[in-house]
Image (tube, rainbow, N blue to C red; front, side):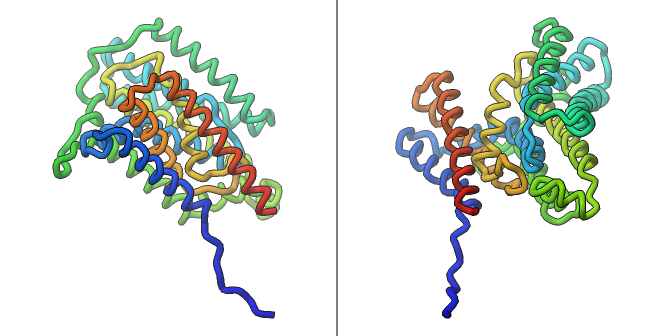
Length: 319
């Protein structure tokens, strides 16, 4: 019997890029200013916070979990670092470290509840979402923290790349994606993470400490949420207790649009970056078209449902 040398087209990897191309083409036709260097730079600045949140979310989803608390934990971290610096006169870098410690601690708490008490990640993070929101509002007294020291807004500064302004926060986001890509692709901890997401029991039988992997992943995700808080503070110049309201949905949407399976064990971190850019392009393009923000949220919700449906159909087709 003759064997075919034809290879299947890797739609799972190409899909996000095709979606990004189609989206950009659509908004280029609809809005003349869309492809300007100034606007594309703005898209990347708008994406950097969600993009970093989505790195942490990707790590968790690769283990077949989910984190609904990411946006609220980010808001708490931003309030802690700005309040420590402004109200208590703490050194800005020490204040940032305190904010990162708080968000990492929340991630660690999520991981311990999932592994030690064996609660579903959905329930755990739904609970910590509300806890983080309440603590943020109580601690900040629902007041925005202003008059930040210059060191806390450094990553919001820009430099010229040709005729386009690029923010230091955007560069930070891209470097974090390269680091995450290298760790997931080239190191043993990265391979262990995929193994746990594919089949935790099989991973356990090969000697991988599943609980340790999960706790580490949730704690690292918390650290990324803290970095996202730092970028949010740098971009807006304030500590906003109401930040993170839509970032949960945007981060999950970015992960799923990027080709990471909600069922775990399958996905590429650079796909998440493409997914985050797609979300940013949609919001930016719709704004240029004069579409109200509430309809942008509606469209984002539809996008995530379609992406999850496509993921489920691809799983059924692979069986």
